[in-house]
Length: 104
Image (cartoon, rainbow, N blue to C red):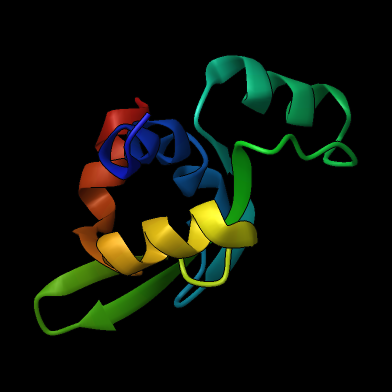
């Protein structure tokens, strides 16, 4: 699964992460497969399969509205992860409200 596809998986977590806050930062696992994420959920986070990583989402208030930065940097280890990090952006900026709408 690509980082773009992973955004849909984490969209469901955003309303809970930012509910009632002026500015927030939340870290949570994101996985390349549904099965891997379900393993993390079933273990209450004590199990982290190889195709999962910890992502950080930070809400930033701006004159344009609520923005969210999804940070992929430092979320993995190993040579394969270093190649991915070199090939793809470490941060993606999105509209928080669009992510929340995707979760509905």
